[in-house]
Image (cartoon, rainbow, N blue to C red; front, top):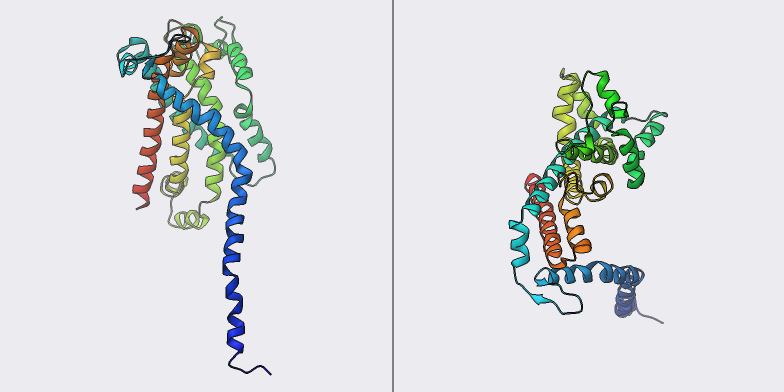
Length: 311
């Protein structure tokens, strides 16, 4: 017959199985990584390995079949001092600032107009979101037709209705960059709109009711309730839109290819031409590293500002 003093010892006996449970926990932790391993290998081969190679190339004069020659920081000095690179950097910054600000403002306005649970809004949102999912090649051809420089072109006809003269748009040096910027804003604003709509869904509705009870109008509620509540959304969208603006390539390549006379040349298209058309791979790699550094600095700066606001 078992005594009462032996019962607690028997209850503690399962504690001997703790190492087994730890082993099962380790296997459960490792299992997701086993499923991710093929994707991680592909990511390392096609992402990190080319990045390491680009860093190496940026310090060399790349000579296929002859061997690379070490040049140190000469490629970076060429990027900083070359007029073509400085113009491309300036155009990139202008496009990034313009597209980021334009897409954020228009995206917020669209989100405020299309927020709600009405049944018909899903169709309107889908129609507005179509530019984001459309292929850029199709978008470029559509805007080429819109920007047709003849007086009877679509855009020039609209300008004529408000008493403005015809414009050459993509074919003129003074308007080509702004024309490409308009395409980028038109394509990026719907994406920002969807993120803003998701952010607006999380705004506390009691704040609207309290501010309305205090006599605040729609604009004051927007300024004192909506915008402060959307600060995290603004930070995320600002980072994404700025990176999208700094890395702009497809729009420029399809619409103007950097012309006319380099008026729309950006850093990405210049890197492409130097590397694949002129075979100056070392300078092109240095330019890509400069672009990578600007992107990293921008991201870290936004994160630091967000942490400071959180405190």
